[in-house]
Image (cartoon, rainbow, N blue to C red):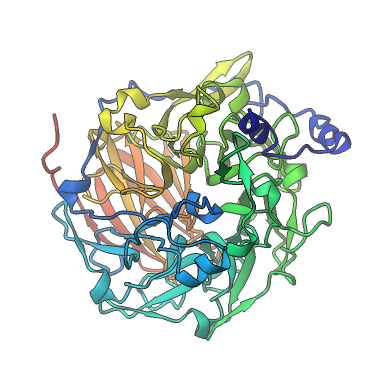
Length: 615
């Protein structure tokens, strides 16, 4: 069948010389700490009974994604859109914004040589839901000034003007939107005035202070060159049109905008982001971005997930420029030298190694990528652990979009979540082991074990143990987490293509001890890029406040840190984005802390009792 051929071709192969350079480094199979290890291993405790329940209706989340589908199978219709948790009104409770699409206009249909085949859904916009603090949300889209129609894709939140309120950036097909938070519950759209309206087809985005000048810059992923009249005819069965894979389209270059205070300046070319490490134009067909400091040098780097093109790792040179090192770092291709269909991405220190590794969601029949970071300061190097583990075996048939690391049971080891769903609604007709609707995947981190004389961090699939809501088959796209009910464990929001959003409440994860940290920097208010090191005896957990990640989505900025059974943190280190370090010894567990740069802990309180939990 043609679809099998299309899937096998969804990726390009690296040249033999380039691949031998990677293999020839001799670093395959290094353990977590980079040695065969006499050090005592760290194991996760026995799993707590945790269940995720569908709280969507109870919480008042009324949302239906409009993908514009009109029967023509135009490429944008299959991409879905994302979401972001952010506290827009500074009341301490995570609010929620959901990106939406729209119907194709009569002009667009005419340009595409077709007419309206299905009834229009009417005016559809993104939705802002205010967290009432009682487990429910209120739709405040209209009064907030966010009822703007667009063919939306992704979003990110950050305080770009350092006025103390989180602003919202939304990407879309055609142009993007920057909604400045007015501090009174309303937003003003200022993208054109601020120089970030952009154009083309934008997808995921992230705020970061790449030049460490104290304000947030903006990175925007771009996908492919597309228009109604330029949509390409593809087929699965030789008769009927299907959604084309991106190999058929020309890629667009992702963009970097530097914040100059009064407005943003496009600096993609001068920052070195227009070219790959091989000198080619960086038309990556990009769908996901993760901000990280992979070599712990204090400068934020950018990892980009590309669809059928090699993934990028932009190394920050510390002088306003980047060098693309994806191939030499080992994240550009699969272990067999194929550029996969990458969608979502996240970065985190899942092994307590002190450096962030990468999780990337890929097309079906390609499995997830779990790139373990073994870099030195002057040599980036990652090894994909998925092919030789349960991660690869379990994820092979799934088409993964939104991905993120999170500690769902608060045992102090970062687990990860994957939202799945195919792009073709009739894929099962040509591949009987692949489905359009797919259940999410959750892998629990079992800690560090010795395997074959090396230390390895082990993940085990646990989705079937987490309740019926985690086994529902959906056409998943965006995904984000937040502790929306402030009970001490993180909950999940999943978006679907052409369907509802789902809010999954974590019931049970709070039983382990934890800390919730809200950081406020000075001058960088959002504290995006700040690192936190949590010392528990000889063990150190490392976290970063980050924007972006997942697929077209962003999780909340405050950190929920699992402490397992520890009653206190021996030492909490905060490394602020400007490099300043503050330390806080002997912190009792089970607290919510607000820390302001230069002022220390300005508020601390316990967690409210959980509401309506299944015991």
